[in-house]
Length: 441
Image (cartoon, rainbow, N blue to C red; front, side, top):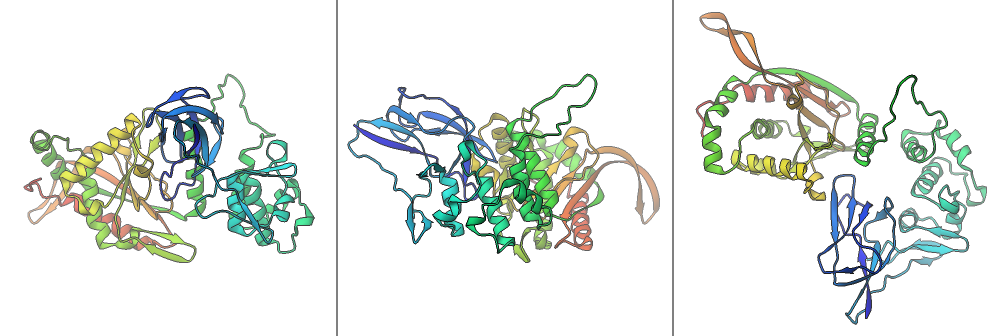
């Protein structure tokens, strides 16, 4: 018999940790290879973790709602295999925490204090020695140092060089000084405060109902506040006569579905126009890193999709510029279906370089979307409505009933000026308005 560790799997390049949602197996339960052992959640999607071997669950190392670093052992399985898999422990060299190259997740207990794998990893990356780690105030259970504690300490240390391990600053003094420190430190402080009881909880007056946010709503709220705090948001508006596009779709949609075995919605048509304009104005497809602009050569379009719970998720069409209209339609439909059925993979919802959202789906004429960090722009389209419109031509003006749609572009004013933002938005509106009604698909 041997013991094999079930490891928290790598879920994407930017994902470093995951939350345990539900255990399907308990100690003593038999499990087959590839059978689901637990469900986990990242800040992108929920997913299942299968067993890597057949055997019996020997031990579960984390509880429901625990946040676990990628690469950490999360359970141990007793198997008939002879080979025993051990995880190397952290090493302390010259009083500095260092972790083995292929292992950054083993917990450590020194004296009376316990350090989680995530805290050890942060300490190793920041060059924090064991003696210094011992003096960081802990707000966790039994005085443990949490992720927020060490991030708060690092932020304060970076702005207050006279702070020494022996100073042993308390949480209250750090919070008081945080108001005078830059925003990055305030972000760490806000993370810490979210874990603490609100001493001035507002419950309202009269007949009220208090509803606890679900996990995804909390994540969405955090992302939205972070985006507004990060980017200097500006929103520009335009309108487009999409009559040709609407009539073309109405005419070909049955034939399209019959020939391609997938439906043609407005979304791939909008994304097709977006891609053409992004190629003309590539700065829209970038991100900001400090004082550097990262221009993205690949075009990965995120599209906001509604979940049955009412929450939104943004799956990504990778290399969208390499797909024709049929390819875009298939990607849009598949990602939307996977989102609704909870089958999105973590990688499906990350890596986007520009985001598109259709607020018209919910009846809105227009909206002011919030930028999906670390992108610098997001386009929203409103509901398509028939309106009387003045048509200008060589014979004079006339009034006609046309299919009209408002577009709005929110962009990061740190690098996208109003001239570029408005020019790009106008280009998209014109691309849709000048849609060729005689085109094939």
